[in-house]
Image 1 (cartoon, helix red, strand yellow):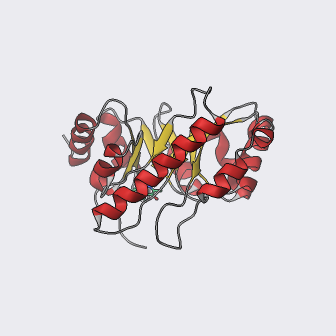
Image 2 (tube, rainbow, N blue to C red):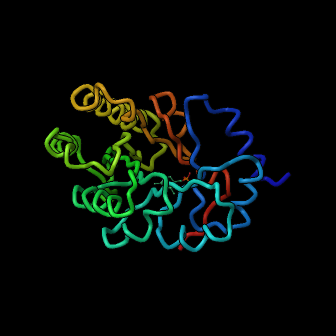
Length: 224
Ligand SMILES: *Cc1c(COP(=O)(O)O)cnc(C)c1O
């Protein structure tokens, strides 16, 4: 068995049943994705539209793609038919663009709103206040072709596990506030996508339902 397949099997065994694994295959070749597929993995994450488009035709049709990277509104139309979830919705403009393109192809697209929880400046995402504003019932009622399934966030890249834990806890608290305020009677607002190779264990302890793991499965990526 390949190392990639072994990593998948090990990870799946160690994750609670309530947590889904997104295998983050960005920069990795189709052959690596197939190794993970052969170990039973069907859910993959990519951060670039172009990469999903280039890889999908050379892979089995039952693979599910999550887009996890920044999406430009002008690329929404291209990628929508091929993704089962967009985890990285980081502006209201993007959410509206997804809704209107989804309407044209008669689909309802699962989305996560990306919340900025890290101390680092550069990461994309909404603040907690912005999320409250964007999720008003008036605005939500116009979004018939997106399903807002929860939140996604990335912790600061640091060795300080207390800080990482605080940041994930912050995401969970924000999730609870929004759930109570706007989604109390909705089943689909249920996802907290947090945790990567270095911090997924902490994320699970803080309530993650989706972990996005790349290098721990596929090996280190070559920095570009
Ligand atoms: C690359 C990436 C991951 C996976 O990172 P690893 O540290 O390799 O597990 C997870 N989430 C997002 C948004 C990413 O861009």
